[in-house]
Image 1: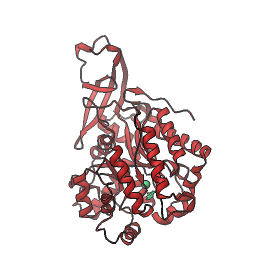
Image 2: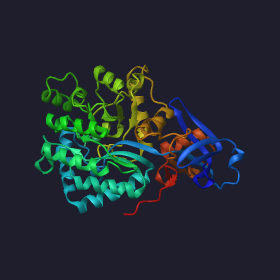
Image 3: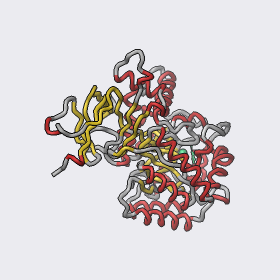
Image 4: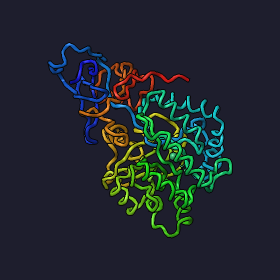
Amino acid sequence: MTTSNSIKIIKGNIIFTPTPEEFMITEQGFIVIQDGCVEGVYKSLPSMYSGIEITDYSDKLIIPGMNDLHCHAPQFRNLGMAMDKELLPWLDNYTFPEESRFKDEEYAHSVYSEFVREIWKQGTTRIAVYSTVHKSAALQLMELFENAGLGAYVGKVNMDRNCPDSIRESAEGSLADTRELLEAMANKDSLVKPIITPRFVPSCSDHLLDGLGKLATQYGTPVQSHLSENRGEIEWVKELHADSSFYGEVYDRYGLFGQTPTLMAHCVYSDEQEMSLMRSRGVIAVHCPTSNMNVGSGMMPVRNFLDAGIRVALGSDISGGHTCSIFKTMVYAIQISKLLWADSGKQTAFLSNSEAFYMATKGGGSFFGMVGSFEKGYDFDALIIDDSELNRFGYTLEQRLERFIYVGDDRHILHRYVQGKLIEEPAI
Ligand code: GUN
Ligand code: FE
């Protein structure tokens, strides 16, 4: 028997996307939450719930929390700078030197605390994030997310070639540290979990990829990496692996391409073979539009991925990307899709608001379980949006959401919930 103690009722203007095609909108509706999960959304409250206290958010919007499926926490200090190089020299000149500083635990703690607070601030409730090669920094990042009450897959990065000595691991050392982290997190009941994170093919030897694939299978751990982001990078992968017919095949050979749940960031230049394998393996393509523009990578043809039946999520890709806001990431995704639409002679349909919203909520959320929707059984991860300042002229609820996404910001996010729990600002 459930008791009323485990039931919460929240009232307001409820908006979510059960499908990419349209918003489901309940004006002045009720969400019944039981043990952190949505029991139902109602226009009028069923009598069985009468007598239970209602948290009334009056005219505010209630929407699912944002899911950021690709982000680099140790690049947070570089946010909004170092935009004058493309991927490979950008890594060498700016990113690798910054990441090498995370050997220092105090430095890692100071940057990661600020980072976690920013993620909270921007309304991201779940994230898949890279740390650095350093085990201690990865553990700190996990602990900070745990303390914050946010959901996170945290990856200790693996790299044993083509990077500065200061952050190059031996394959054996990298595998041993990764195993240790998997063991440390193995039986924990937590919203924070490890994820296997070979940085990308050029920075991992065959031996390392092979060992990581075996760990993923043994522990049933998900995988995240980069894929077909930049033309120079793809050429380099071809040189390094002349026997592979496409980039993703290298990951696949080692059990790192959908054998366990897998995120592949960017996919700007994936060919048909690569896309076909992504579809059949259920690999999620993570679209990172801000990064693709800033680092000059190109335009991911997101419509082709959707048409091919590939799951697509959104990522901030800090600090290739310059904003932690997944709302702004939605806007850039729509804008890029419009450039592709214009370029295609209006043949390739651009993204609708509901499609972009779906990617940020239910699409990306699927990586974390039943997350990103208010359908029955979903975790109640939600944002309460006070857009009264943006609503002076009177708009429909759908217009209000669109305006918040385009011109709103963190000042309009009143509250964040994860699994039904109100999440306060993390302490620094
Ligand atoms: N490919 C390998 N490492 C990185 C990284 O840190 N950022 C981006 N955008 N691409 C990468
Ligand atoms: Fe990245």
